[in-house]
View 1 (cartoon, rainbow, N blue to C red):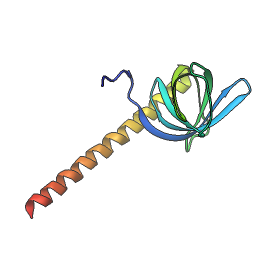
View 2: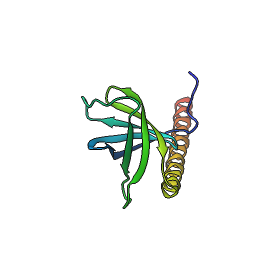
View 3: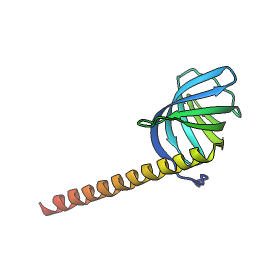
Length: 127
């Protein structure tokens, strides 16, 4: 399968609120990238594809949430694929920093996992 995404997604579980006029949807962020996110909603929530939402992402340890405008581009059961359509410069800087930190953590975990697997193989071969 050919990857269509310009930006890699990283796992991040955070409380998320989508709002549109008087409609407020509560969900949980599953992953995020520079250009979009995947949000899990309560089962049974129905939303139309193509809808525009104001998205608020509450990050642990952060005083202020991320505020992003997004379009709903994919729906799969209770999972929503969002394409970011607008955010301000401060949000962009915060998002870039967050993605860099999370990507670094993923790289470190991958290296540690590979080191551990090599050690297991060596131990298995040795006896």
